[in-house]
Image (cartoon, rainbow, N blue to C red; front, top):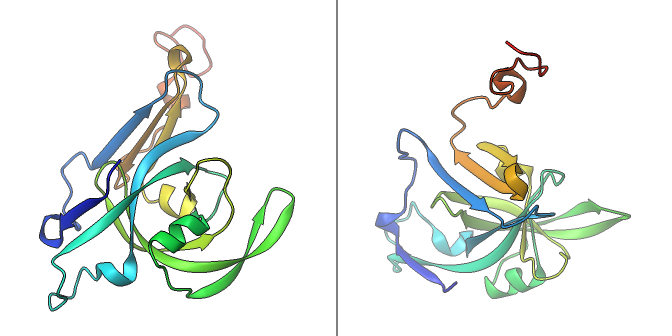
Length: 184
C-alpha cells in the first residue's frame, strides 16, 4: 500500500449512503487474527475544520491493523508514532496479557477500508506482535456493526458504520429450523 493524498473537500465527513459505509475482509482459511489495512494521519496536521490552513490535502500513511474485541482502546506502535510525528497528550496505564505498562497517549485520524474517516482518536503507544502496526480496539469497533463468520473454513470480518440493525443469530436460527435447531 502506498500513502494516500486526499483533498480535504473529498473526504466523507458525516454524509453516509443509506446502507452505511461497509467493508468485508475474507481470509482463505480460519484466521486466528482479524486483519485489515488501514490509513492513519496525525490529527494535529489534519485540521478538517480550518479552511485557513495552507495545506488543502491530507497525507494518509498505510498500516497493518488487527481488530481486537478484547481491547478497550486502540494501540499503535512506536514506528507509527514516529512516522506520523505524533505529540504526547498524556499518560495511561495499559494492561496486556501478564503485565501493566505505562503508555503515552496520542491523537490520530483513522481511515478504515470503507473510507470512514474517524477523526481525533485517542490512541495508546505500546508494543504489538509481529508486523502489526495498529490494534483496533472497542473504542472504534463499537461505533458500528461488527460481525465475524467462519462458514466453509474461511473467516469473514464485516464492519458497517453507522450501526443500522441488530445481528441476532438466535433469532435467525437455522434454515428450516427454529433457534434451537428443532424443525419449524
